[in-house]
Image 1: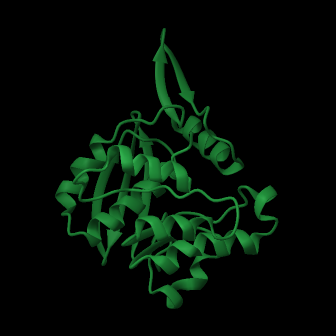
Image 2 (image 1 turned 120 degrees about the vertical axis):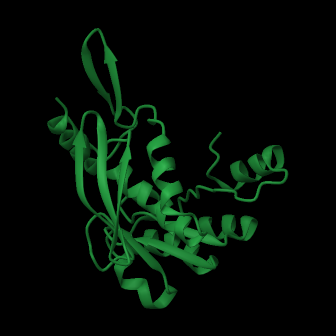
Length: 212
């Protein structure tokens, strides 16, 4: 079963958690109140809302219901980080005192510039407090870079150095079926089998254009 539901997360905690310092929870939802239920179980100190799209609209019935459900995480977390590239999230900076990350918006606390795919790696520059840091990863595509940014902004809030983060970013493995680069019989394969949205398909086309 899924591990991003209330019952799935409860089962995972009972079977796996002993003395972990950090526990990362993906919170799935299909209706108002679902995320609050999970928050009441895990009591999050840090919350990340990465995107407000139109997923599961057959259950939520309106964009407003989807947004309200996602914001249940912000209402329940001590610290909140939003993706400034997402629709709607930029309107809530004052309400939740959140920090933002972005693929290019200089209003964000952490943003990226100069993304380049070369020799099967993604090179990008991260800007924090007007200082630039140069990173490299095996993960391809802007969606992956956005997710890396979310991890970086949280890691910085926890006190990790940029030297350590540069090493960790480079060590990230490819993710199966999500813009996964493969070589078979001198043929380059870009496996994006788990993608199910238009933005992900656009991202894959951009990656394909950049590959030799």
